[in-house]
Image (cartoon, rainbow, N blue to C red; front, side, top):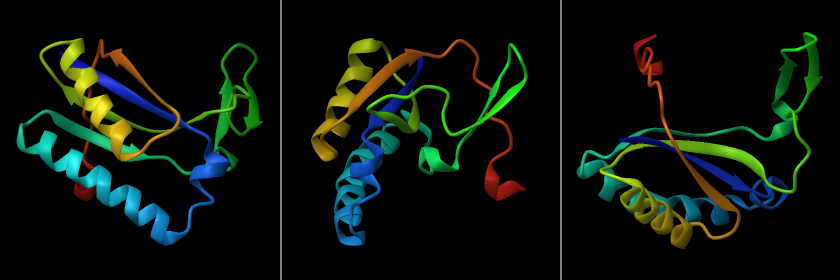
Length: 123
């Protein structure tokens, strides 16, 4: 089953890290990524720019807003796509990510439709 793991954290904290702090977190995450990639379970993942770079289109009235749609303490900072046997296996991955990068939350949501599109390097 495919799951999206949505990564939430306080972006003011995350984007205030020094390069060394950010590199340390990314190095710890790389250990988790490589393990799950070797198992064939890690699909695309990405890290988003801060919400100050976001634009929201409200569908109902075609209104365009600077920033994210909702004001929250934790923002969506990125996501993973994983292919696992069940929710428990997905939670195992999320728990390993949480050890490597504490704080915030990981939301696991089953994927109903998956369209991989064209890989960026193929464009």
